[in-house]
Image (cartoon, rainbow, N blue to C red):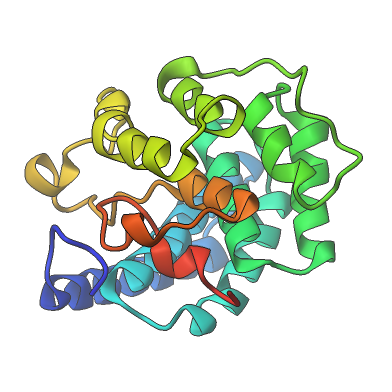
Length: 230
């Protein structure tokens, strides 16, 4: 188990439920009218369920090596039906792509889509720069200062970066997402809860090659993703 809020039995049930819902949605997509708006809407639901399934499996403790291929497919499906909606959708996929060291073709496809279709952002560009150095980030605006300004300060200003990252994860990351739909879902809406992982923190730690021994077991820090291939 990697998650600290639910046990394995809970995640086993969660995985089974999501798989059933994905199959239900796919059956509906195949058998219903070929209306573009309907198809697009159902595809978005399917994508979200597949990503939630991936997250639930990681939280449950499944082997990271077994999650790499499904993530690559998820990344490409996201690009194929891309709609620049929620900021964190692209942020989380870029971050996980960095940690899993996905191949250049898949990462470049996602990065190119984000650059072309999303508003310019420091954190997007910082992650992309780690794989595509010609993409600059220093002069880019930070779209969401809450909570990512503190993370930017970890990158640019902190002398003791591991300690600064620890403070960010303990004091800022979760509480700064209090307006997010998933906030406190493990208590208030367990039917939608899948995890709380600060994927972007893990990606930054990997890019900086932090000594993250002090972050082992810390809530929200995806240590096993950071150390895939390490």
